[in-house]
Length: 293
Image 1: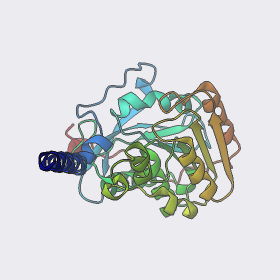
Image 2 (image 1 turned 180 degrees about the vertical axis):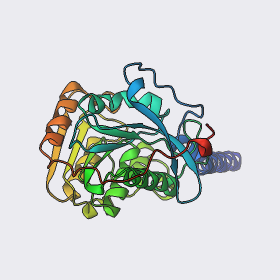
Image 3 (image 1 turned 45 degrees about the vertical axis):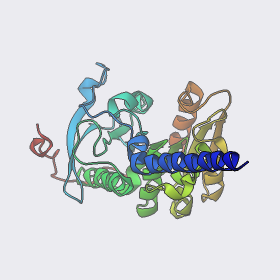
């Protein structure tokens, strides 16, 4: 009996040690998992877009210079969309999700985050938000007012978009597969670990969405197992009007951007007031030398 007790105690100690190790690994490795990225320079992989692209250098408030892609609006009065991509890969992998906007004549600034796509720095919540601010500063220098900007956040990037919409009176915001917070996602994905309390980069969109005053459009896949539909819906319910919701049946997280979704986005944008004309400015594209080119 005594041997059985010692054996049981040993098993319990072993389980606690393994559990503590798993929690420790998640604590120290969480940013590598959240900001899963390509570190080489991104490829456009679309010759039809090459003539429309400017490679630009965005200066952040903390001294970084970020290579990003800028596509000028193809028609007068069209707003410029700032595209905040999801966590994996780089802007080259994600630009196909924004191509329909360029083809429809909208301007597009595809921001590449710090630590992604050959850019300097290491990503974290504060850093990505600073990168987003640099994108809006760049557009202001190009004569694009806040009211002529549409924020388009994809998955992880929705947290950046929501923060910037709380700081700027932009023309509109589009969120693809958003969350209430990264902590809420972690709690669902890792239910047997106190993941909610371990998350450092929380991107608490639920606490900020009420500060957005711009028209809002959210679309989400009904079968999304990474960021469940319920989280996107909760965020939508907390937002101010005017707002529009679209559920895409039969699709998950990675295949949510269907032709139906893109048509709905274009219909939403078509109903917005015409963007203010560009402010007269002598500013030109910033020099690329700080970005290593």
